[in-house]
Image 1 (cartoon, rainbow, N blue to C red):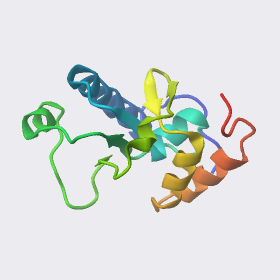
Image 2: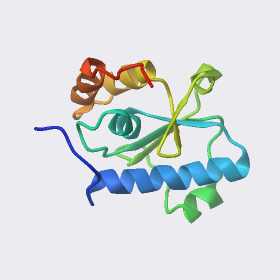
Image 3: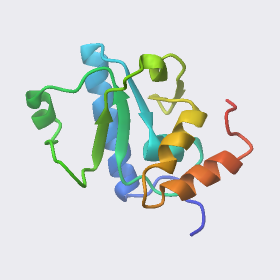
Image 4: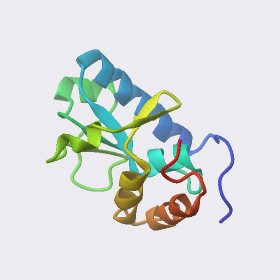
Length: 135
């Protein structure tokens, strides 16, 4: 599959919209958030279209907030993955792309390797890109 160029009206656009809604919640509640995996990989070096919005958060949104965002907890196959990290170090060094805070490229690479689907393809494209770990 050739690299994706630009924003299309597909799951990528939906994932970015969801990421922006989560960012808005995090800003309003002063909750540290940093996006990783699909959204972050795509924003840094588009290769595969993001199918899942994944972020590290200092705390999970309350049930009422999830409902407002049109989200609900599921045990499998969700389109949004939120992780409360054991080590808050993922929030110490971030990069901002299109007004979204992302973890470092190295963290995106490691996280994409564990996603399945085309995550390893996106990880490889990111790692081989001349802008990897450079802003």
